[in-house]
Amino acid sequence: MFELTITEDGQIHLSGRLDASQAESAKKEFDKVTLSAVVNFKDLDYISSAGLGILFAAQKRLKDAGQGLKLINMNQHIRDVFRYARFDLIFEIE
Image 1 (cartoon, helix red, strand yellow):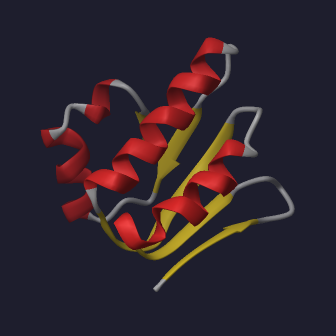
Image 2 (tube, helix red, strand yellow):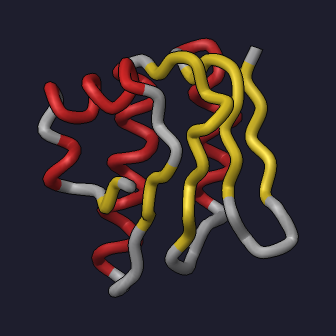
């Protein structure tokens, strides 16, 4: 199960598992993001390469427009995935 919600202050909350089966719905939501945003990983348990690809595409599109994503509250496993993929060099991660 995967859920993406956007709070009133524009923060994007991810929960559950972001994998290939959820990629299309997640992509549709990230495609709507046009300004810099904070993505809260507090309740995300797992991210696959498909999920990484969605975030990378959104970051690239936003960076081209002078914007970007800031990623917060990652668990250690997801933080390690980002580090192994060297995505820690692409995203601002807190």
